[in-house]
Image (tube, rainbow, N blue to C red; front, side, top):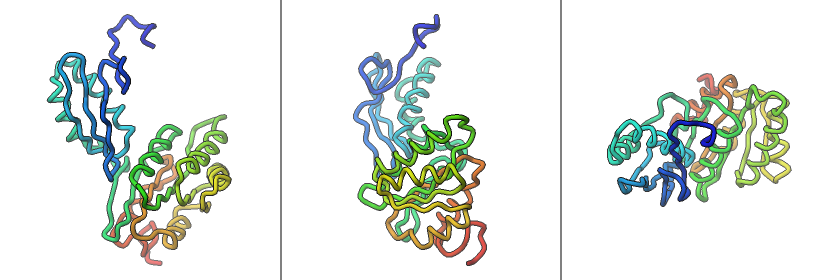
Length: 241
């Protein structure tokens, strides 16, 4: 893209050819990244993101580049990045229940890239704890849909996710089948209520649970209910069972 524009080009990333780059990236137990924001002319500043998921490092670098082009100092940029919170709900919302279960509500939307980012965050946050993925279908993928859902299941297996619950129809089954071929314990549910019933039997103290799907799957309510202190004592519509 850089070769096709007359505009000023600013490169960001983790490699030496980036004008703004992240060095010494670390991720804490809640999946929040810390790194040195390095510039070519103002030195470096420490950034401690409050957003869960290492993929936010790239987002932060892009925001930093815009800030610098607008005239902000590196120290101000680092300070603002370190206080930034999600602009909308259900995007990597992390809740720690009193019983030690961590729930990641990332049910705002889903595509292949964001699914990978969410699963990698789940794996990083688990760190020896049991990782449970609750995944719905990715919508509007067209002719690539079957292949991308199969790849998603393969990724679940590659990352060593302990347990997978999928919700939906044929495409959810593709995720489940690919993960099961990779020796992941799986179950496919027709709707959020059935998934919640399965979670009641599965989730135990110390587990880390990711809930993610396209918005139309409506899994945000399931995740919110699961995140409550007694999140395994009712159904996702709030009715006792």
